[in-house]
Image (cartoon, rainbow, N blue to C red):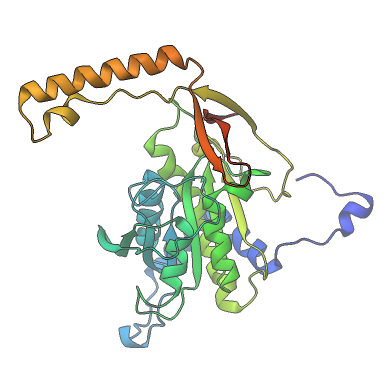
Length: 335
């Protein structure tokens, strides 16, 4: 690391010392052992150990997972698999049934939200018809799972970065924020996904990379030293296997450029729409020709696609025409 000078050396670390030390320990454990360490490890392995009754073992902490990419997201599957194989926690999943990446902190009200059990090896999982925030809210309500509250909530592994102002409309960050608002520690994990470059195996590498950080967070949560009042937003580079370690940074003011493009609203009716009517074929074809003629006349008489509404004005006894113009657009983000 580089040497700190001046006021920089006295700047407080925003992360608890316990989390930092635990993270350093688990990262150090991933390094290949030296010959001396290997010899001592072998000696320790050969030494007898006392057996402990299974009933006396403490219950594992519960970790709740969700993912803005939906229940079938490769990032979610990779994280579930890594946590289950790690054996450090009991894994529960509650995620949207489909991809909902940029719906922010939206919730579903006055509508029924369905929850359906889904098979994940080693984990208990449900998919719901709501948003990522709905997933966390429902799971924490006690209506879906039998436990009172999880030790940690993780949103991820999400597809695409969540940097700067993206966090305000990111449903991945919103899910972690919802847990934080409910008093549960949370982490959001996102992979810098790149089209035609990122592979499913990159999600597995990202999960393995973040596993030590998750275990360190769980250790601090159990000791009561995990940071309060904020969540961890972890960004994984596009090539996780080539990472150089963790770096603590601050929220940037990056904002992706947004481009609006005009799109056509004309959509021809499918033939099945007419053929499915309970009429004879002759009537159907006649109606089709009539509709086509009317549509052609409308296009010729109104090339700008403007709708004219006529409103009666009782006081003046006259009619007033009001022109309504309808246009459609699609937003695209560029980096």
